[in-house]
Image 1: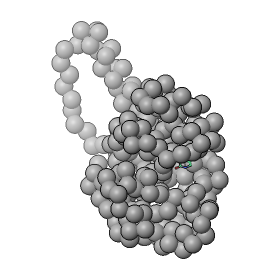
Image 2: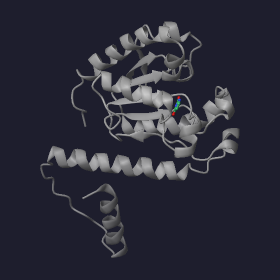
Image 3: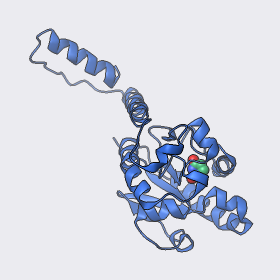
Length: 229
Ligand code: URA
């Protein structure tokens, strides 16, 4: 039974006048439990994305066609965090679907991962005009949404794409060139940093260091145990 169905059933019992419920503990089939958890995480993320669709906490809502909440596996081990939606993302409501997104897909493939296995979100969920950097007030306004996503998904590794995401999440002004050299910790979770795919498309000299960073993520990812519940 899903969490939603269980809540509805409990509500029904309450209305029917049931005051006490005695619960007999039964062994839980782990696979069923994991499936239920995945379904409730999906539902929660879906509900939140709908709740924030009309957000007006900062000026970015003025140019919004669609809020780009994030997408992927609601119970992902790896959470990838970019900067902000671009024109394509603003139109589709999906993160990383433009040229940078296509490169990201190839990068993921090169480390034996797919979009379906990971979760992708951005620091801000609406497109900054002309793709300018998001302003600190905009990032601050949007950060609670991202923190909420992190709490729901509970990833085991992060990958931050580009300076804006890395500096905002690690609360630092250190350059990306230095940040990518070590793993960091955010909310107790290891965090890797690499160049933004859009930067890699523009500057070929970023290709090699990006590949080195992705290999570190791959090695770490494939050593992870199953999620502990
Ligand atoms: N760049 C980002 O940082 N995020 C997107 O979703 C698209 C491009």
